[in-house]
Image (cartoon, rainbow, N blue to C red; front, side, top):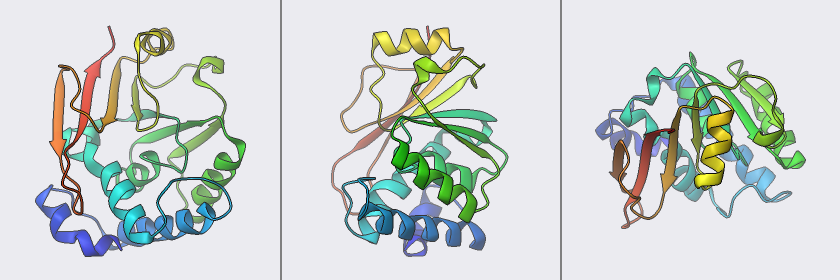
Length: 194
């Protein structure tokens, strides 16, 4: 499980406490269990969930994400990246926006089981939210095109972290990394909304 990647994480300057490791392992096991009932992810093993989703979700920690105080996770799905980040950044508040009710049921169960007081879950679309949003957004699932960027700007979002499997256009910051069992590069961008 996550402790098997301790050296890899340390190399990335991500140090986890025993409690964080236990919570991340519990989360991975829950994703695997619930994945049999509802489609949370294509991953079919704990190793795959840990490597392709949990480790991937932790990568923003290497580019200054720890300093964010309030964050929206758009298209949370099975809780990636918000749940691993909420576990490792207890002083950051997360708003998870997910349109699929069954996935929200899973997220609420995880919130209770892991006692994650720093997350809120909304079963809606971002377009339907009328309350003020945090200024920072993160997403692994939603493509941020011009139309979506305009919606985000109108909602008060000023900073976006996105995950990409292809090298993106030039943004204000790009981090390139490779997950332990993969040979292909992945990317995280951090950009300001214009």
